[in-house]
Length: 84
Image (cartoon, rainbow, N blue to C red; front, side, top):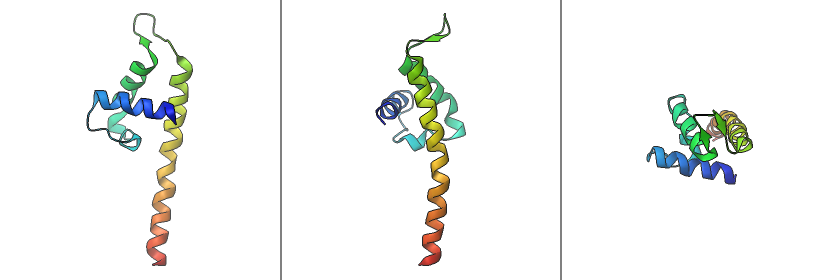
């Protein structure tokens, strides 16, 4: 969770419209996410290496998990509307 908050803060420095991590889970924001991760993990363009590659991997895995979560919340909201 901490690494995702650090990611959101870095993404917000690139694009001030980003308020939450769910704002980054959008295909149009892909390059924003890439640049935020590169800045956060210390990507060196000359050597094409990260200073902390494990952090980049963790952020990628966490974003992937979050991408799968909204599908479940939308279906549960539909069920609530049906039951009401």
